[in-house]
Image (tube, rainbow, N blue to C red):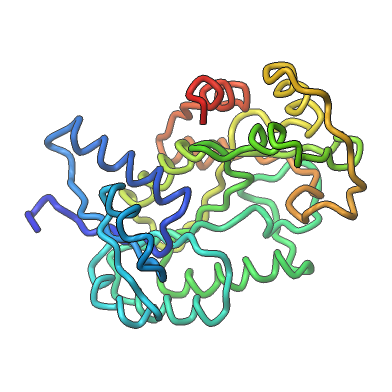
Length: 278
């Protein structure tokens, strides 16, 4: 690799990795003086090799993370797989000589805490999902990772509009609980800045500028999709990610990272998705 070329390895090639790869490749094409990245991504499925390669990412087929340890030496590493004690332990050992690490966590670490959440809010490790995320965060912090805690991620072909169109969406309770979200492009932009700053051990918060109730965004979407308003479901029957009532204020992290959100509100992000037909 050239002096300007860096190695960027995705441990897990999913929604965030795809968006991040696109931003990195677009930036390198637009600015020839910018640092270029050679992209690698892990997968356990040989069937995904062609799909991953089309993204500009060189696939690394693995059964265990130990086999990619040499690929991670002196590389920038982005970790996006869900918490798994055994996998996190193995991946942390493999990444101990990485040049920089970003672990993509979740605002699930705030558990049942309600109201405004920012960088100074205490976490809550009582619920199993919060504890699993916090345990994973601690392991990655011990090997020098930066942490990005993200709320609900949408965009790039994923989002509530697809569930509404399929008829599978049910409103959580009466829809009055607040929810925060981040468009995958904006989350990826934040991760690029975290990688470049490489402030080891830092914890950042992601989220757009307009937390809303479930009801507000559903009403907005069904109007534009010309759909009936969906039925509701008791909160206790919802997926845990839909039971929260939090408003994420990520303004401090966004300012520190020097990022301008392309989609600062759900209206911006979903308008883009609907116009793109994704």
